[in-house]
Picture (spheres, rainbow, N blue to C red):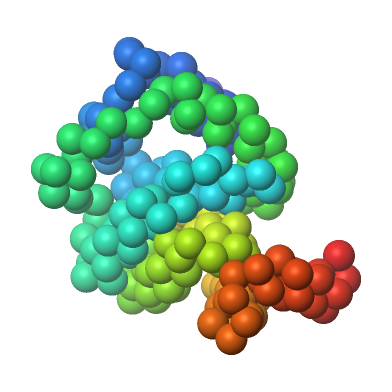
Length: 217
């Protein structure tokens, strides 16, 4: 009789990962080494999650966005495991901030857990397709790196969805993430236009109400 392997939810896996950290701070290199066997999926998911929250954790978007852009380039070049130079590996991360992020990630995690499961796994493992996913991740991560309102949350949520698809080898969710990318790019494009032509204040005053109206929010 074959044994049934219990599937651990994404939120539970992240909670166990943070709880398993040995100290109050952890270097990015140590974090990377502990999850490198999961490939790019879990690394991207952890990096995208803080900025994907409805109330983003401050100070994460730009450095994490640049790191994800570097990972995306590696995906496009066909690497199967993430790599960072030593100076980035030595940077410290606070366990308390990681814990805060996971504890406040209920909505995006529940959404992704509801839809992800292994489907179309051959597509999710296809090198050319993963290269395309990497290209989209690069564009989204560069957008979320900008210090401009509305250019962070939507692109980082797209990366979050794509990372979950990579992690669970769910080709269906990966396609869904690719379809969400133009919407996130459109939101970021409107924000950039108002910031460039009218200043940063115009993003909150004019661009945000315009986008909410278009999306029916």
